[in-house]
Image 1 (cartoon, rainbow, N blue to C red):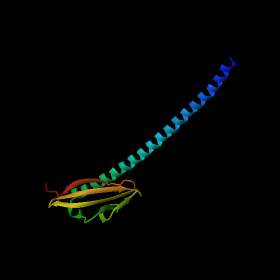
Image 2 (image 1 turned 90 degrees about the vertical axis):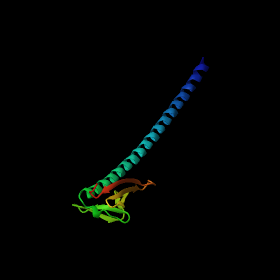
Image 3 (image 1 turned 30 degrees about the vertical axis):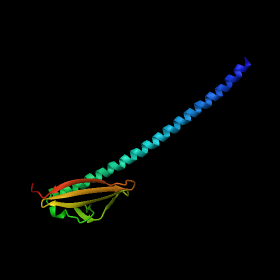
Image 4 (image 1 turned 135 degrees about the vertical axis):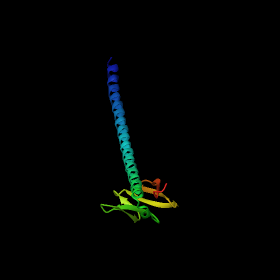
Length: 141
């Protein structure tokens, strides 16, 4: 009888150690899952903000189109829109945004009345920039 009690006490210690090991593995797995979820969430947030900056650039081009400032929409290389508070200007180069993004656009003449407007945004950890294109017209359809 004593031999059985002695062995069952040893099994209780082993069962406790196995339970603690399983709990430790579950905690580490959960922590790893949470870290990955945070990374994915941050990457999606950065991409979403980049998309918003691209759409903003396209909207500004549409404002130029609708306000009759067709002749101002010209750019020989990379350009960006800059505001002085009351109006938009076109400047050469790329525009840094939030210390993460770089935004620019280019304009290509399609015909006498149409220009292809391409907005580009890139950021530090994205190898390929995001691009959004539209066409602007001279008011004659």
